[in-house]
Length: 458
Image (cartoon, rainbow, N blue to C red; front, side, top):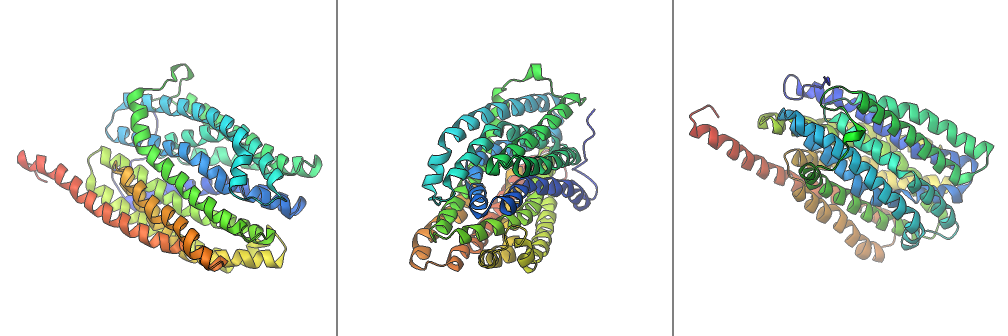
C-alpha cells in the first residue's frame, strides 16, 4: 500500500512544513533549468542570446500554464478522494491525469512549434534576438510533453504527501541539465539551441523516472499503462477545479507579456537584460512561497474530503503565517544581495542597475503575492475555483494591463511600470480574504445544520 502522510490529525503546522520543504527544493531545481540556461548563455554566447532566452519566459508560461493548471485539479481531486477513502476513484483519477498529460503535451508541441515566432512578434521582441528566441521556443515546445508528464506525476504523488521522490528525480535531471548545457554550448557551440536541447533531455529524464515510480507503486497510486483512459466524470472534476487555475495562470502570464512588451518598449537591450536577470532571481523567491500554496491546497482538500472544516481553517492560517515569513526573509535577502546575484547573469553595470530597480519593487513586497496565492489555495481546496479565478483576473491581470495602457503610457518609466505589481497584490489578496471568510461560514452552516437536526454535537 502507498504510505501516505496523515494530513488530518496531529501537528498540522509541522506537517505542512515537512510537506513544503521538498516542494520548495523541487521548484527551485525546476527554476535552475532556466537559470542554468541564462547563466551559460549570458557568459558564453552574448547579451543578445541571453535576452532571447529570457524574453521567452512569459510566453511559455502563458501557453503551458493553461494545461498545467489541470494538474492542480488532479492534485485536489485525488487528495479529496483519499480523504473520502474512495480508492476506486483515486485509481481512475491517476490514469485519467496521466493520459491527459500525454494528450495536452502533444497538442502543445504542435501549437508551440508553429506559432512561436508569431507570438514573439506580438510581444515586440527586439530584432537582434527574435531569431534566436524563436529557435529556442521551437525546440523547447518540441519536448514539452515531458514537462507535462512530470508535473502531473508530481501532482499525483503530492496528493498523498510524497514530495521527496519528485525532488530526487528532479535533482538527477538537474545535474544532467548542467552537464548537457555546457557540452552543447562550450563543446558544440550550439548557442541557444544547445541549452534548449539540454533542458528537454533533462525533463525527459525526470518525467520517465516519475512514470516508472508510479508504475512500480502498489496500492491506490499504481499506474498501469494498459488502463490509461479518460474517465469522463473524473476528467470533468479535474477540469472544473484545474481549468480555472490554468486560466488564471495563463492570464497572469498575459499580464506579464504586457509587462515584457512594456520593458521592450524602451528599445534597450540592457533594460531587457536587467529585467530578465532580476525576474529570474525573483523566481526563486516566488516558488518558495508558492510551495505553501501547494501545501495549503493539498491539506485543505484532504481535510475537506473528510469533513474536517476546522482543520481547513487551521491550514489556511498556518500557511499564511509561513508564507509571510518566507516571503519577507527571502525577498529582502534577494534584494540586499541583488548586486552580487545579478553579476552571475551579466557584468554590465547599467543592466545590473536596471535589475535592481525591478527588485526594489518586487522583492521587498513579494510576501503580499504569497498571501494572495495561499488564500487562493484554501479556496480551491474547499472546492471553489471559479471565484478566485475571477477575482485574480480582475484584481491582478486586468488591473495591471489597464495600468500599463494608461498610467504607464503617460509616465513612461520603469518605476511606474513595476509599482503596478504590489498594488495589484494588495487589492487582490484583500478580496480573496473576504471571499474565503464568506465561503467558510457558508460551508460551516451546511455541515453543522444536519448534525443539529440529528441531535448530535456540532
